[in-house]
Length: 482
Image 1 (tube, rainbow, N blue to C red):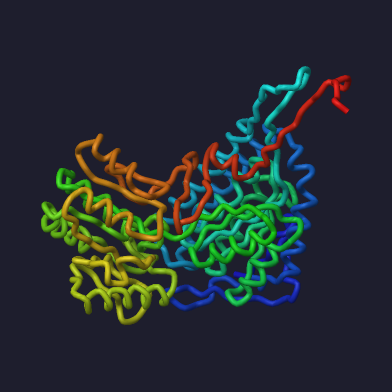
Image 2: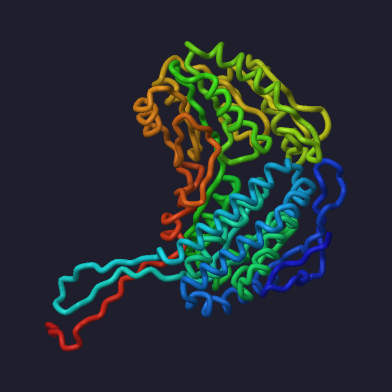
């Protein structure tokens, strides 16, 4: 399948006329040929968005709401297309891509509902005869950079609320799923989004730095939101800071799940398995540190290993729980972490890295200690760890012993205790008796520490994607001291 950039609602070739291929991680066959974007393509897309901004930002909220809802309908209607293409481009399961479309559709509908919730305030002024207002208005052309791991969810998330707030967007597609991200654009066009309001640029891995830099440096772009690795997020934040452009960054994670001695162990096993192995562990919120109090560690480990062994693994075309990871590099990375851990005394309770291919079973590494690389490194694959804790305080200490701070969980049958533990966890998200993996369109989604800053979702996102200004209406006959 050959695609183009989406600029002004038209499919266009790159400025150099070149293409790159995205191959299936399972079969190795070419799935998508996409334009090799360059700075000239970025310039064209940004200028299209800038030209569209005037009309889109002035559009009444009810009409913007209708258009976004129509786009949600169009996205939902293409569910099968997303599933079929997703299995080929990134190797995930059909249910995963179906869920992606469902949540992405919800994000568009939530954004549509927020168009009438962009509110300011009247602020009492000391000056007689003055009306003083805190006024929110659209910013201008925003940049959205979306990853491959939850391609439809995170692709839509990078532009849904910005558009609802009256901005226009240039979206940088991931080189690992250019077809999926471009298909999102098709749905927006089908839903009636005006020309230039959303533009999508694709690029090869080699050209990513040029495209990213061009988006950040362009004089017409105002803010950046990026979801991806902490390493790249740091580069983006540093470059944006030179231009004093605000960023919203949702980055890596090492989500801990604490299992206390009074936990419902069956519930904890189910929650930990879902959190660790959904989408082959390729989720920023994936449960990578299961911290179990000594008193129940043996019992939990046995039940958790049995659960992992019951999860079916196979090709994306089959009915399985775990399918392919996005590329062989993921397996090699995970294998290195496992090998290092075992050499330092850890035990593999279930699974293991395959010698060939990109399909790996659910894997558990137990008795993990701080000197092992897997204790602190983000694995981003179908592997999780079990770490023993002496008690609640020790468990919280281990959970917070990480540079990351996105999501977390604690299992206990004492709800008050669970709430107090959740408050102590240094993460943007904490769940009591639920998995670390979870997202809803209306929630303030984001992390702390090296997991980034800023919040997607609901009213919190309005702050990220609007400019708050102080505007006054004053008495023209007021007294001046000079």
